[in-house]
Image (cartoon, rainbow, N blue to C red; front, side, top):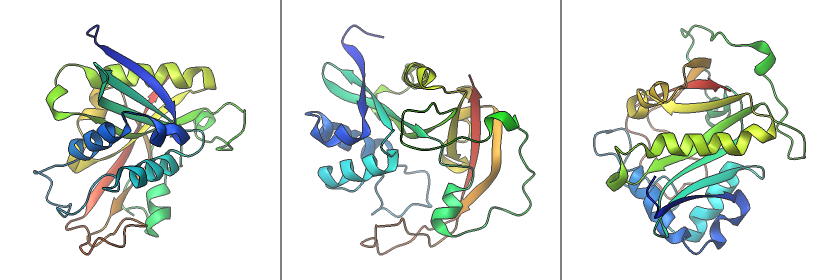
Length: 221
């Protein structure tokens, strides 16, 4: 990593108070814009377009125990990776009210690692989940994703982590996560159906244009 680049860790509830948050907010929105994925309407953004509302939404998404690993280049945020206690195999289906795909084969995993208590206390948590992982387009192709993962592991290992889980859209980033070491299947997968609108984003007048299929993979620590 270049000398001008540093990595910091910020608790979820302190995101909006960081002086660089407006720049990171813009970076996250830009990083999630995909011109080759036609399922998302142009009006959709990863976070609320207003920075303070975006910080509030991401803080809530990360939960009280969540943290954001941020890479800064000369003080400017260029990448981030959120991490939080695992929300469970079916959290997308729980949010949308949808059932998991019926024809998917059950995943094989260590049952001792399969459950955890998500309580926001001082207890150790075995299963953690990646959230809001992105690299600014101008900085891609330089190994920053792996650096982010390495720093996430430094955060969660002292907290009892034995698995780090990535829940990803096959259409968007299906190849990336196995390449980074998330090779152990978790759960049966889930799907966001055409027409879906994110909770709390009622101002969006257009729903998802196509089905998006999600899979989970774990990195065993």
